[in-house]
Image 1 (cartoon, one colour):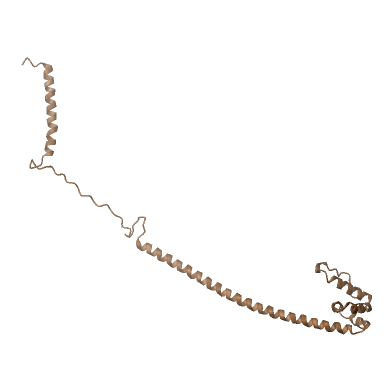
Image 2 (tube, helix red, strand yellow):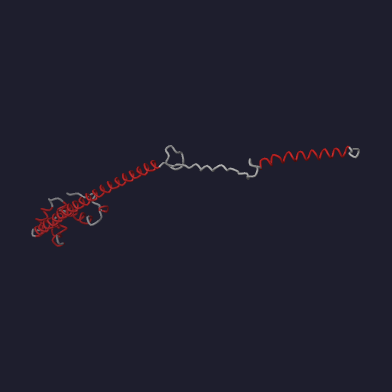
Length: 209
């Protein structure tokens, strides 16, 4: 075997080694591909898919976002009770307001009646005073000027001014001429000032006598 040199032996050894490695790798693959009977195809079993876990919102003690149904029902009941209380409160306030309005209307009617009565009484008093003043003026006009002046010189200044002011100018002039100088000056000043506004009147320094 002189034809087998050392290099050839090395190459031959490497080839045998490679074939052995290849055969060792193919044997397990062939074993797994064959069935126990040797001819039936390989069946691969797939594990059944487990159903996804579901969340029960009504389960007590649940910590999810949704509240249990009984909690929601209680919240709705509380909300309705609160709304009913608010409606009752509003109704009570409206009833009290209506009662107050009725009382106010009745009071307005009563005050209007009192106002009319007072107005009628004032009108009666004014009419009576006007009639009395007319009688008083006629009474002094029928007197002699000296007698009328003597009487009016002793009465209060307000009454004297009212009587002189209600008389016709001719009769008033005759009585004023019979007055004392102080009385005539005083009545003249008062008659002039009473036609002015209260803030503009000047009755200071007037003497009754």
